[in-house]
Length: 250
Length: 266
Image (cartoon, rainbow over all chains, first blue to last red; front, side):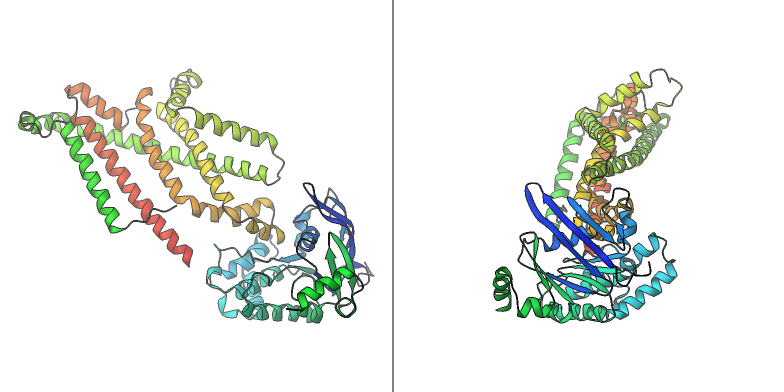
């Protein structure tokens, strides 16, 4: 593809998700280009996390189409494991593997999937840990890390697969306030290095600073979309105004 | 899961054991004057003469042999059944396998192990008379134990945070690989004490193997009884041997629990 830089990396069309009799997503259409950072904000229960988790089919979309680098990943024949190698995900609760050392947490997938031999994966793990500021924790057990350190290891683990895009699902929501900064700092560096990022967050300051575009989701729809300046400074929708007045007052 | 062992509780446990032993000795006539007189003679008759203690030794060997191999079969069967059930619940399309697993677990847990043993021996393998009955017993006990082990494993797997599976899948690992490298190792660690208890139960369960003509530890006691026409000493000895082994294994489980909980903290 010659126009890889112009074509969207992920394109979502009419995405719907129904849990039982609860419709969580009511037709989402949006896209993200290479190198773009998109923050998804909005009230709880508005469908932000579900939207993000549909992108790598952690949740199966009920209907709609998701294209990743042109490929329809909701098609029946799609090998989702293959797709996920290129889409990293960072979870609210880190989900580190407690029975493995930090090093093995990072090298497990690349070695099991035969992407790297163990020696190379080890070296890569050390590089990535240095990058997130945890070079000295390489042989530590996850339990002995603080929340912020765990999340930074989780980011290193996602990066070990050399993903084209990273999906952050409220990465700082489970952290003690004093640890949020260190995680945001790592994410900021990733953003500055040109990583494509989807970020579901309650950190409005960070969204404003890092995002190229902000999606405000409410009631299973994208209620408002625009640059951080548009959405934060000149919101058009009453719902956005109301939400922002609540969260920014704090 | 773990029983916290304080020294006081340990003391009570030891006293209880002593009381049980004393009771068994009393039952065997140990404390009646007349019996005490010829206790040594009867002991000689039962265990020393003609090297009869070897009957118990061989019986113990058979019991341990059956327990060990049934355990292995139980582990393998239990692991497979539990993974089938969990995978089906997790959306893997194996409806038939799951139905089989549920059927298996229901039937084998819902009928006595001894009845199963008799059916294996006298119905299913009725025509295979040259087959060593010990192998039949191992199969019967192993498959029976598998049903219980399956439920233990399933509980262990379901106790693992679903986020672990999600993290594995998000990295591109398949369901099977995530299960094998991420979920199962953690689940296994959680259920080791319960598995051990299952095998202790299995050890005692094999005492019905005599019904299909295997000279296990229990049957060895009965064989001595038949030779010496002595009603109590052989069986009390058998009980003591079981008790010593079970107490030893229980001690191992307790150590294991302590070791595992220490490992979990870091």
